[in-house]
Amino acid sequence: MTGEWKLGTGASYAALTGFTWPANTGAATYERLVTKLKMVRPIPYTDNPLIIDQGTQSIQVNVEGVFWSETDIKGLAAQAAKTKVGTDGKAQNLMQRLYVSATEYILVRNGIYRENRFATNPLGYPYILTFDAADPFVYTEGLTTYSSASGASPRTATGIANSGTAYCFPIFSIVNGTGTAITTLTITYGSVSLTWTGTLASGATLDIYQDVLESNGLYGLHAYVGTTETGICGGNRIILAESVTGASMSCTFTGGSGGATFSVKVPNRRW
Image (cartoon, rainbow, N blue to C red; front, side, top):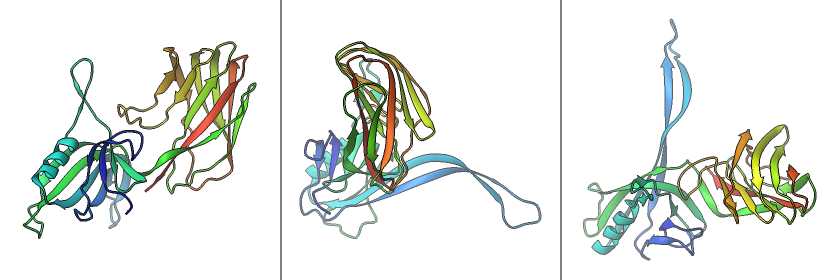
């Protein structure tokens, strides 16, 4: 492992705000537990039941280790239990990054601390942390971006690759140049299309998130930079399979007389 473990919020390992595991505390270990919701039906006169997978019921991450300072164990427990409070005063899920190295992290929330009474070292503070997880993947820090040049519709991003070992949902970014507003978008990958309808003003940026967004744990969001306009997404989510290389995605838009730049940002993750 390179780099001490970290838990907190931020866009990178270096900028993370939260708790950092002290050096020389012994290597922490973790496991990811995925519980499936299954329906089992017996088949008459056979020993083989029919098992139907009905999707994931829960995803948890368990972390075990030992600290030598009461201050450290209290600090970690407090960070794990942190929540986010909305403007209405209600507690919301706080998505945090659990870095297991300087480059890899897991998205977790709702951490619960407990003393590990089965540990064999009575001199320190052995602990177990249990988190809910947003998904079962380990992410590599940073997004790989593939962009088109500014110009007329359609714009195509080429050479797209997924270097991870798990499928992913790319993030799409459209920057409108100077000129008229963009009112519709169609992003196409093979035979699958994702659409957006709204008003993207001159000079504004639209980011379409197809998967979990760390700031609030929601899915299918579109974020606007430089404007407060809104829009609606439709069609289908676009999936990039693991180990794909040399892929192309195009963006056809209505309006945008000054041209637009279309970018595909790929999150690399592994099982």
